[in-house]
Image (cartoon, rainbow, N blue to C red; front, top):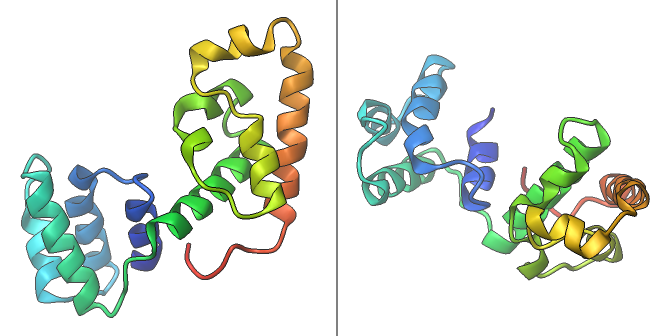
Length: 156
Protein backbone atom coordinates (compact mmCIF):
# COMPACT_ATOMS: atom_id res chain seq x y z
CA UNK A 1 0.00 0.00 0.00
CA UNK A 2 1.40 3.42 -0.95
CA UNK A 3 2.09 5.83 1.88
CA UNK A 4 -0.46 8.32 0.49
CA UNK A 5 -3.13 5.60 0.65
CA UNK A 6 -2.05 4.77 4.20
CA UNK A 7 -2.46 8.45 5.08
CA UNK A 8 -5.99 8.45 3.68
CA UNK A 9 -6.97 5.24 5.45
CA UNK A 10 -5.36 6.46 8.67
CA UNK A 11 -7.34 9.70 8.44
CA UNK A 12 -10.54 7.67 7.88
CA UNK A 13 -9.77 5.68 11.08
CA UNK A 14 -9.30 2.45 9.12
CA UNK A 15 -5.71 1.95 10.30
CA UNK A 16 -5.05 1.91 14.04
CA UNK A 17 -1.91 3.71 15.26
CA UNK A 18 -0.39 0.41 16.45
CA UNK A 19 -0.17 -0.78 12.83
CA UNK A 20 1.79 2.25 11.65
CA UNK A 21 5.27 1.12 12.80
CA UNK A 22 5.01 -2.06 10.69
CA UNK A 23 3.69 -0.08 7.75
CA UNK A 24 6.67 2.25 8.12
CA UNK A 25 9.03 -0.74 8.14
CA UNK A 26 7.40 -2.00 4.94
CA UNK A 27 7.78 1.44 3.33
CA UNK A 28 11.47 1.43 4.26
CA UNK A 29 11.87 -2.03 2.76
CA UNK A 30 10.21 -0.74 -0.42
CA UNK A 31 12.81 2.03 -0.69
CA UNK A 32 11.19 5.06 0.92
CA UNK A 33 13.66 6.45 3.45
CA UNK A 34 13.24 9.45 5.74
CA UNK A 35 14.52 9.98 9.30
CA UNK A 36 11.02 10.05 10.81
CA UNK A 37 9.96 6.98 8.85
CA UNK A 38 12.96 5.17 10.36
CA UNK A 39 11.97 6.41 13.79
CA UNK A 40 8.38 5.26 13.28
CA UNK A 41 9.53 1.82 12.12
CA UNK A 42 11.52 1.51 15.34
CA UNK A 43 8.58 2.23 17.63
CA UNK A 44 6.94 -0.74 19.32
CA UNK A 45 3.37 -1.57 18.35
CA UNK A 46 2.23 -0.81 21.89
CA UNK A 47 3.83 2.65 22.06
CA UNK A 48 1.51 5.48 22.97
CA UNK A 49 -1.01 6.23 20.23
CA UNK A 50 -0.26 9.95 20.47
CA UNK A 51 3.47 9.34 20.00
CA UNK A 52 2.90 7.05 17.02
CA UNK A 53 0.51 9.53 15.41
CA UNK A 54 2.93 12.41 15.91
CA UNK A 55 5.87 10.55 14.35
CA UNK A 56 3.69 9.22 11.50
CA UNK A 57 2.44 12.68 10.63
CA UNK A 58 6.02 14.01 10.68
CA UNK A 59 7.10 11.13 8.43
CA UNK A 60 4.34 12.02 5.99
CA UNK A 61 5.45 15.63 5.99
CA UNK A 62 9.06 14.60 5.29
CA UNK A 63 7.78 12.49 2.40
CA UNK A 64 5.78 15.39 0.94
CA UNK A 65 2.44 13.74 1.70
CA UNK A 66 -0.37 15.80 3.18
CA UNK A 67 -3.04 14.27 5.36
CA UNK A 68 -6.34 14.46 3.49
CA UNK A 69 -9.37 16.19 4.88
CA UNK A 70 -11.10 13.77 7.30
CA UNK A 71 -14.43 14.12 5.47
CA UNK A 72 -12.86 13.30 2.12
CA UNK A 73 -11.01 10.35 3.64
CA UNK A 74 -14.28 8.99 5.07
CA UNK A 75 -15.97 9.37 1.66
CA UNK A 76 -13.18 7.29 0.13
CA UNK A 77 -13.65 4.74 2.92
CA UNK A 78 -17.36 4.57 2.13
CA UNK A 79 -16.56 3.85 -1.53
CA UNK A 80 -14.09 1.13 -0.48
CA UNK A 81 -16.80 -0.43 1.72
CA UNK A 82 -19.24 -0.37 -1.21
CA UNK A 83 -16.63 -1.97 -3.48
CA UNK A 84 -15.97 -4.71 -0.93
CA UNK A 85 -19.71 -5.38 -0.76
CA UNK A 86 -19.98 -5.54 -4.56
CA UNK A 87 -17.04 -7.96 -4.68
CA UNK A 88 -18.66 -10.08 -1.90
CA UNK A 89 -15.67 -9.51 0.38
CA UNK A 90 -18.10 -8.46 3.12
CA UNK A 91 -21.62 -9.61 3.82
CA UNK A 92 -24.45 -7.07 3.80
CA UNK A 93 -24.93 -7.49 7.55
CA UNK A 94 -21.27 -6.55 8.11
CA UNK A 95 -21.69 -3.01 6.78
CA UNK A 96 -23.52 -2.00 9.95
CA UNK A 97 -20.27 -1.94 11.92
CA UNK A 98 -19.48 1.76 11.69
CA UNK A 99 -21.20 5.08 12.21
CA UNK A 100 -21.94 5.74 8.56
CA UNK A 101 -25.40 7.05 9.34
CA UNK A 102 -23.77 9.96 11.24
CA UNK A 103 -21.50 10.97 8.36
CA UNK A 104 -22.17 13.73 5.91
CA UNK A 105 -22.82 12.53 2.39
CA UNK A 106 -22.34 14.74 -0.64
CA UNK A 107 -23.73 12.79 -3.58
CA UNK A 108 -27.01 11.05 -4.30
CA UNK A 109 -25.14 7.73 -4.62
CA UNK A 110 -23.55 8.16 -1.18
CA UNK A 111 -26.89 9.08 0.37
CA UNK A 112 -28.65 6.10 -1.25
CA UNK A 113 -26.03 3.69 0.06
CA UNK A 114 -25.80 5.17 3.57
CA UNK A 115 -29.59 5.37 3.89
CA UNK A 116 -29.70 1.55 3.66
CA UNK A 117 -27.07 0.94 6.35
CA UNK A 118 -28.60 0.24 9.78
CA UNK A 119 -27.09 2.03 12.76
CA UNK A 120 -25.80 -1.23 14.21
CA UNK A 121 -25.84 -4.95 13.53
CA UNK A 122 -28.41 -5.54 16.26
CA UNK A 123 -30.76 -3.07 14.51
CA UNK A 124 -30.66 -5.13 11.35
CA UNK A 125 -33.42 -7.54 12.30
CA UNK A 126 -35.34 -4.92 14.23
CA UNK A 127 -35.45 -2.41 11.38
CA UNK A 128 -35.76 -4.83 8.48
CA UNK A 129 -37.90 -7.57 9.92
CA UNK A 130 -38.16 -10.60 7.69
CA UNK A 131 -37.36 -8.73 4.48
CA UNK A 132 -33.57 -9.00 4.75
CA UNK A 133 -33.16 -10.46 1.25
CA UNK A 134 -34.79 -7.43 -0.35
CA UNK A 135 -32.65 -5.12 1.78
CA UNK A 136 -29.45 -7.00 0.85
CA UNK A 137 -30.32 -6.74 -2.84
CA UNK A 138 -31.09 -3.02 -2.56
CA UNK A 139 -27.86 -2.47 -0.62
CA UNK A 140 -25.82 -4.20 -3.35
CA UNK A 141 -27.52 -2.12 -6.06
CA UNK A 142 -26.75 1.08 -4.13
CA UNK A 143 -23.15 -0.09 -3.57
CA UNK A 144 -22.71 -0.74 -7.29
CA UNK A 145 -24.13 2.69 -8.13
CA UNK A 146 -21.70 4.29 -5.68
CA UNK A 147 -18.66 2.43 -6.97
CA UNK A 148 -19.46 3.28 -10.59
CA UNK A 149 -20.22 6.96 -9.92
CA UNK A 150 -17.71 9.74 -10.49
CA UNK A 151 -14.75 9.70 -8.08
CA UNK A 152 -15.09 11.88 -4.98
CA UNK A 153 -11.83 13.70 -5.55
CA UNK A 154 -8.15 13.18 -5.01
CA UNK A 155 -7.07 10.70 -2.39
CA UNK A 156 -7.00 6.99 -1.90
